Image 1 (tube, rainbow, N blue to C red):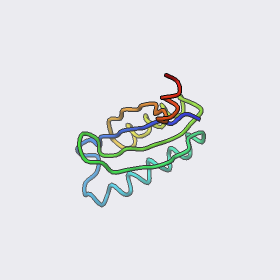
Image 2 (cartoon, rainbow, N blue to C red):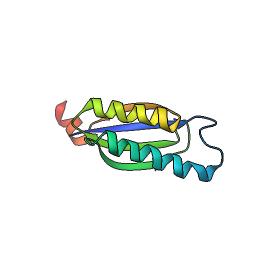
Image 3 (tube, one colour):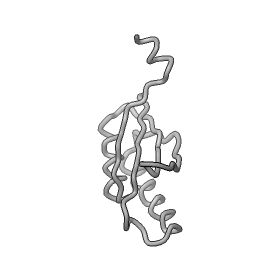
Image 4 (cartoon, helix red, strand yellow):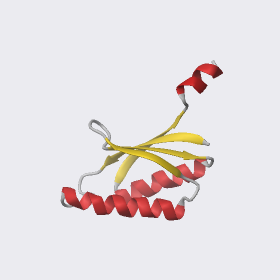
Length: 95
């Protein structure tokens, strides 16, 4: 199973009050669980800087990860950047 990092930047106007973000996050999460059953959600982090959220997921299907990123974009009103993440030891062993 491959590991992916999805970085999300929430767009201005995505929600009215900061507390409203909880409902938005719940909606996005529920939609991904329903429509992308091949995604194993590992971690989610709030970040500071260029991106607001970092999600770490696993999947055998790049198409499901792409779909999850599109759900985040459309339902979450965000810009995303998705990367394949290789465990450090596996990366070094492949060199």
